Structures are given as C-alpha cells and as structure tokens.
Image 1 (cartoon, rainbow, N blue to C red):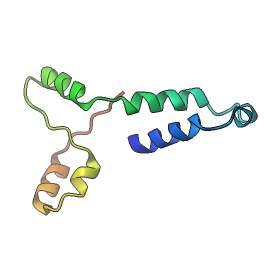
Image 2: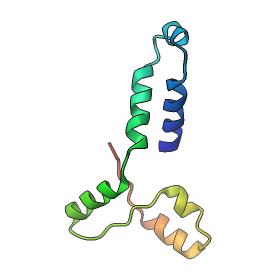
Image 3: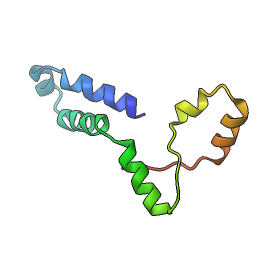
Image 4: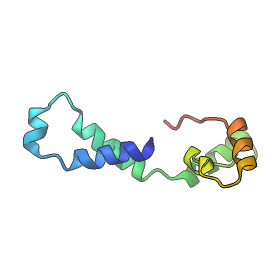
Length: 88
C-alpha cells in the first residue's frame, strides 16, 4: 500500500498546472505531501519506538516479504501470529 501511495504522489507531482486547475476536486498538494512523508519514512525510528513501548525486541516485516518467503513453515508461522500495526 505504501508503494502505491508513493507512486500516486509521484505522479501527482508531475501533473501540469492546467490539469490541476481543471480538476480541483483532487487534493494534489496532499497527494504530493503524503508521498514525501512516505518516502522519508524510517523503519528504524519506528523499531526503536516499538522496542521502548513493548520493553522487548520486535521484528518489523512487510507482508509482501513474508509472503514471498521460500520457507512455507516460517511463512505460515509468521502470518498466523502477525499483529498488524497502523502507522499513522
């Protein structure tokens, strides 16, 4: 999802001024701004914060990385016990 939003923001940044005026219902600046936030998102900062909150080590994985694992036992184990965190 983060990658998709990044691509949308990148595309919005390249839209001409005429097109932006013609389509005022689209939040062009917000799309570009969100892209900039996501591109500079630092998982190491989030890792440190979560470690402090939980008081123990945590593993941060993307769902895509786990699903592409060649180890079916590890993949099943991780996906069945994963906890989704909302990054907002």
